[in-house]
Length: 340
Image (cartoon, rainbow, N blue to C red; front, top):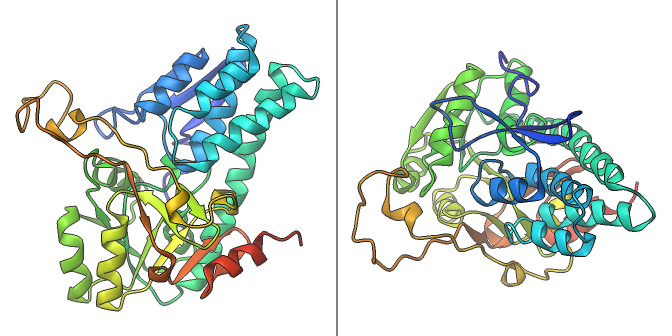
């Protein structure tokens, strides 16, 4: 692997008192780093996907909370504002909650910064373990289809679903990735393809509507995707389009896996129906790029969910930092989550 997580570090706290991120809106055209110096900066970056990935926005939320407290905001108010930036990923809510707890226990905003730093460090370890668990689970898979972006750009480490790919490559195993375009923001095409190209890992891009045909062609050994939130029974919310891929994979007889840390499991959500789904603006669908000519009339009615929920019955296993849950995902996840 020629590009390390350090070289493409998506976010880091800098001593000057700001969160430095790679602005992922600029990729792949330009690798640009931006310093976020206030809670409002962090909230805007999360909402506009300048910083993204379920794992990363948990840490970003902790740092955003810290900046708000530093600047004199009432802790409960800034916690609510930051946590509401994106509703589906459980990591954002939990990152803010941990930072708020550190302050409420007599700490200062610097204690909240320490929470964010600890979350980044834990993410590095979790990603490495997920990658190795997935490498072992999918030992015979050399051709992997993935959806959206779940690698170095989405985490502090080697990633979750893409972490499996990086682990295979590091072990000298043959691996070829098929990356869906991932509409409407093309995070698979813009980010996953670019990231794997930097690492010199073979990758082929395809439009979302071609995934079913590719799966039925026999070219894919396994599907591995990430997760923004996993219900207690194993139902999984991920970037919209994942459900369609899971249905096609089941029909084609291709195993479908989710790779995510156990922190993505929301035990308060009994099933996928309890997971809030973020709805985004029509502009993302109606224009190819900001400022470009519209593809349809500006007043066109658009339904633009950012996520969908894949039922546990379509998931062959959930790869976590403590092993793989299957076949009863709910029981398997609960067992893995118990203290060792």
